[in-house]
Amino acid sequence: MCSLYFSESSWIWHLAFGNIMLCVLLKLTTQTQVPNSNFHPPVEVPGESKANLMSMSFPGLQLHIEDQHVVMDNGILQVNISNPEGMVTGIEYNGIDNLLEILNEESNRGYWDLVWNVAGSTGTKGIFDRMEGTSFKVIVENEEQVELSFTRLWDPSMEGKLVPLNIDKRYIMLRGSSGFYSYAIYEHLEEWPAFNIDNTRIAFKLREDMFHYMAIADNRQRFMPLPEDRLPDRGQALAYPEAVLLVNPVEPDFKGEVDDKYQYACENKDNRVHGWISNNPSVGFWQITASDEFRSGGPLKQCLTSHVGPTTLAIFHSVHYSGEDLILKFGPNEPWKKVFGPVFIYLNSLTDGDDPLLLWEDAKQQMIYEVQTWPYSFPASEDFQSADQRGSVCGRLLIQDRYISEENVPGNCAYVGLALPGNVGSWQRECKGYQFWTRADEDGYFSINNIRTGDYNLYAWVPGVIGDYQYDAVITIDSGCEIDVGDVVYEPPRDGPTLWEIGIPDRSAAEFYVPDPDPKFINKLYVNHPDRFRQYGLWERYSQLYPDGDLVYTIGTCHYGKDWFFAQVTRLPFFFYPNIMRLI
Image (tube, rainbow, N blue to C red; front, top):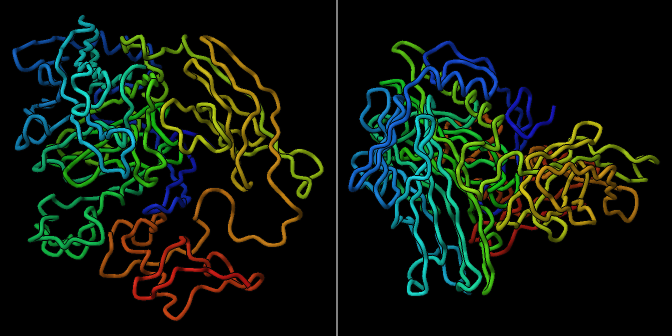
């Protein structure tokens, strides 16, 4: 079964390292049974009934407003936010006074940030901005919900000093919910100056003395080193600052491993839930993203998740793995507004003696619930569209390739999506608007629901088929519309019958040869792992495997699974010439 979400026997893809946009395919089985524990909420019932049950079972919300802080309290957790800056300074839960790192400054615990630059700048290293609010307002306050707004408005006197955006950061707490939501609205007015955005996200820095176990997927979880292990007296810097060889870690078991936050990156479409577990006491801290619609670059764009800190991120826009192609560039006289989020910060706990890994299983269940209830009905901003304000598109994708079949064949498990109008394949670089993706069934039928109003192109590609499809006409989504495009036919580019091929055209490098890493630079998580391409330094392995000349691949004799290196990489500098894989 092919599915956009985590499901039983779902197909999960991952991009390779560096700027090489290659993929590895793996199969992930996700358990769906709710563990028997004291999780919040502990019951699994349909969305509206579940919300009603929680409202009856838990006390009403309370909001405490102080001079420098605002506290949201629903009886399960308390969230302390700086006033008017809008930084999350404390999260009290399960008898623990603060889950965030208390040794950090209050502005360095839970915060939104972005990296920006003036128009015409080059590179991807811009100006870092923690987006401190200057005004606070209560949007909703009752026993069922609290929604808070922390804003910063721009005016021409700030030109060159602050990013030319109106920023509205929102925090929401619901009755009976074991967590809180956050989203933000960015707005650039037409008369404001041109500028660029490189990255934007929300980050949480957790307590180092508590959270030592990190989970991203069923087969990507482990105990993690400490941040001190990366310092010069304990770690050795490698080819780029994020990668450090642990030579004298606090915990000897980590000695000889490489720590690198990019090894824990994940594709947008699979990046639904990740976070940390504390063993004593047994508490989980999870970042859940129910939708990809506000993320840049489409479903295959890869972003950071959680990493040593302990740090948990929700990335909304990033130039990682893409460089300048994905910089958000706004010209003069270009109005823009976008809603990022909401994302959900979910907390859970266990009684003493239970397996802490049950916290991960429960977090996956909560993720499924969040996905099923998207788009949320509770955000108060009129810029976040509810389900009844959105539309849908359905149809069937067929492939016309007369060298394969005289009849059109279904686009089996095709990726089909809507993004801003552009050229064929432009969704991969699209950053300013929203994207909505799904997977077709085995007969090529697809349905995309909960689409925000606006103009879109319909894009698609089919695993095993070369090229990209784009529907000829612009599709306009109005509130409540149900558009059926019928049968759409994609004709892949061809000059004649296939003479030979290397690999499978599925945007994945799973079928090619991925070498083992140099034993001096390993991450134990990825030893004999489907994601072994994430190991550090594999680009150097090419020159080591072919010291006297480049790879030669003979058609009809060689097999790409063992004879074709999975990435196009340069040779080591002392060879003085680039890698040229040759075909015979």
